[in-house]
Length: 84
Image 1 (cartoon, rainbow, N blue to C red):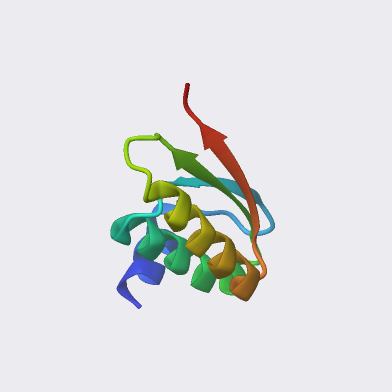
Image 2 (image 1 turned 90 degrees about the vertical axis):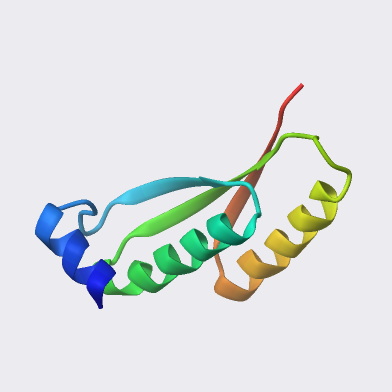
């Protein structure tokens, strides 16, 4: 409720707009994806996710797999970026 009020007050998100959201798969960025998913229906926005894999840990590939499952569940589009 607080986030919705803040966004309406500051005009952060506009209705009927597409947003590209980059995330790393950590707890904080997954929380951000869920917040945007909840706002998606309220504000009638479209979301495309970009998973940023920094290749710092081999577990990041498992995190990407988990993110794919999350996007399938929420019916969101996702792309992956791998740094060289």
